[in-house]
Figure (tube, rainbow, N blue to C red):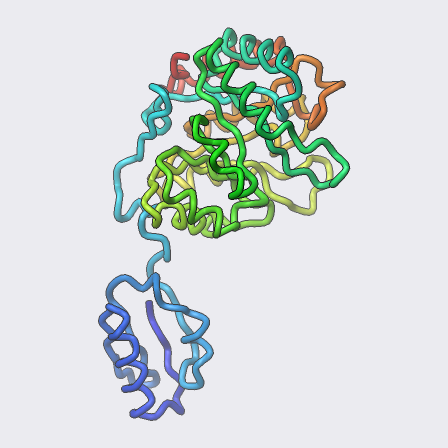
Length: 339
């Protein structure tokens, strides 16, 4: 971190600031230039509040030389993190496919879909027990009953289950869930992220609708700072000015996140586009971009789905898409993991 001082800064004020900074376990050094004075900071600057330093009358500007996230940073962890989910390896050079309905609706609906996606090659089962919806009148999920049905589907198919948590009060219900998903709307729910940092489960963290990649990585840092380093990053599309799709899928996020971080990266083409016809081409593009997994919504009867039917593939369409995904993944040297 570099602190650029104003010309009007008095020596005693500068000395006072340096003393204050040194007490924060960093080494502050004053550099006297011909036209400018700066303070360089060496050490862990994550605990320094840039805004409070910037607000000081003697400070003209504060700049970070390195990213504020440390545990998620590839600079300090050059090897890819590999997260084991019941034998499935995320980040280990193979491709995983997380598939299933947006919402758990009924036992028959979930079980038939789970069996179908497994037969097509999916390696994990997704399904929403708790559903964040824009409208308070829309279906909000079955809650605890939805989780029970997911566990039943796992018994039948053997697929690890992925489902979203919305509130800390429900965390005990997730004791037997394999991967806890944090949705886009909760990406900066720091109280929730801190608590998930104390659990020993993989956390699939989705990028917020209007969040930068650095903000996503800082949210991952909240979880990892608590001791849980099993974080999976998910790009699910961001809000832009384009109204033709539900969101805009930022495929550049995959190589960028992999450049800056060692954590596995997932692409959710269903939420990114909101259009079933776009799921296949965006899935293939995501595989080509180097993602570690895809999260795809599948419903046996999309027209009558209780939520997000427009972006859901039928089991038949998913099976055909999987054939193309498998072929491309094999070509790219990252075959689909075996379910």
